[in-house]
Image (cartoon, rainbow, N blue to C red; front, side, top):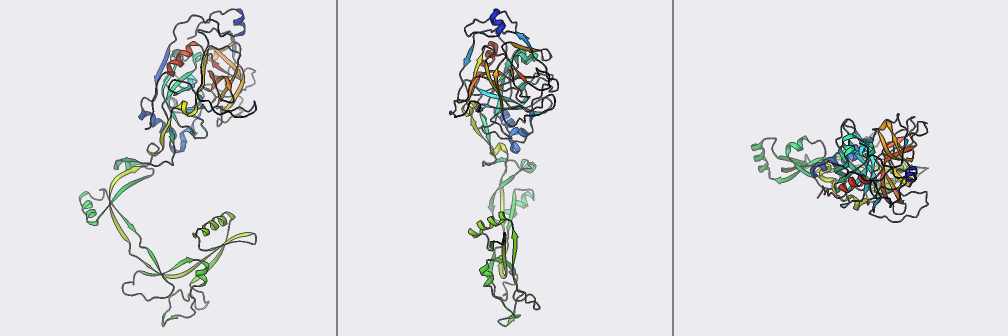
Length: 540
C-alpha cells in the first residue's frame, strides 16, 4: 500500500529537497508489524548452536540472499519529489571508537556492520548485510525487510535468524546475536510493499563460542550411547568383590567397568642373568634405544660363553659375521625434522645424534639388547557414576553481553533531504547479470556518493518511493546501512536507508545503482517501537 504524496511546492518538488524546518504533511498513524522469532532462551540457544557447531560450518555454507533475479535487473525511473510526513529527526549513535589517522580515501569500516544469517522457507541457508543501531537496551539490528520476512509466497519471519557483527569466514569475533522480535511496517509484512523494505530486530545478548573452553554436559546412559561425538564417563574405584557383586546383580550392561594396565618395564642390564624360579616368565631380552655413549660402552663379547654359562643371543648373534646384538643406523632427514630433533635433544627427549653435514641433515639412532623385567599386569575395578558428552552447548557458549556494548550502534535519521552524501556498506557476493563476478562476500565493501534528488521507482518491483545511489555492489549487500554524515575517525554515522534493490541504469548488464526505501516518519515509528523493547540474555 502506497502513501499518497501531496504537493510540497514547486521548488521542493523539483529538487526533492526538504528544509529541516519545513512542516510535514498530515498523515495517519502508521501501522507497525511485530513478530516473534526465538521466543525464549532455550530456543535461542538452539539457534545459536545450529550456526556455531562444527566450527561454524552452517555459517560457511550460507549463500547471499537472492530474492532478486540477477539476470533480470530492472531500471529505475524517477517518480518525482518526496513529501515528508513529519519534521526531520535524528537519534545519536553510541560507542565511539578510537581515532585512526588515515587518508580520506582509506575508509575505516564500522565495527557495527556484519551479516544476518537465516534459513528461508525452502530450507536454504542465506545471509544479508546489516548493522547494529542505537536503542534503549543496546540490542537492535537494522536491515532490509526481505532479510527478515520470507517473501516467497508468505510473510513469516525467517527461521534461525542471527546477526554476526564483524563476520569473517565462519568466525564470530564479537559473538552470535539471536533475533528475538522483528519489527517492520504493516504494508511490508502483509502486502510485501518494497517501499517499506526495512526491518528492525531486537536480539538477545550475544553468545561467544569456542571449542577450547572446558566443561561437559551430563546425560543419561541412553543419550550417551546414542551420541557419536566426544564423550567420557566419570569413574569411582571399587574393590573386586564390589565389582563382582554389581555385575552379578545388573549384568554386563550395568554401570561397572575395569581397566587393565600393562606391567612396568624395568631394566636389569646387559649382563646375562640366569632366570631364577620366580623370574622365569618375567625376564625378557629386548632391544632398547640408547645414547651414543651407552652404545659405545655397552659390553661386547666375542665368545658364546660368559662366566662359564651360555651367553645370551645379544652377545654374538652371528658367529660367521661377528654381528653383535647392538646396532647403529644413520638416516637422512629434512631440515624441519632436524630442527625438531635438535629441540627434543636439548630437552633429553631424543637419545640419538643429530648432525648437519655435507649440505644435508642426518640423525643416527643406537640400539642395544638388554635384559628387562616386566611386572605383572594390574586390573582395577570401577563403578560408572556419570555419563558426559562434549557439545557446543555444554562447553562453547558464554555471554557476550549486549550488542551495543560490544560493537556500538549507528544513529538513526529520518525525513532527511535527499541529494545528500551517503556512505553505504555491505557484503556483496552475487555475479552481475552478465555473469561477471567481482565480489566474494568474504569482506565488506562500501560505496560513497550523493543519493538521487528525486525519488525513484520500478514497475517490475512495484516500487514508487525509493532513493538511489550510484554503486556497483551486488546481492549480499542488501540490508546494509546507508550512513548519513559518516565519521571516518569515529566510524559512526546515521542510518538513513538500507540497501533494498540492485539496478542497471545504462543497460550494460552490470549493476550500477542500488536503492533504498525513503526513511520517513512512519519508518521512525517502526524504529521507535523496536528501540524500546528489552530482550534479555541466553547464557548465564
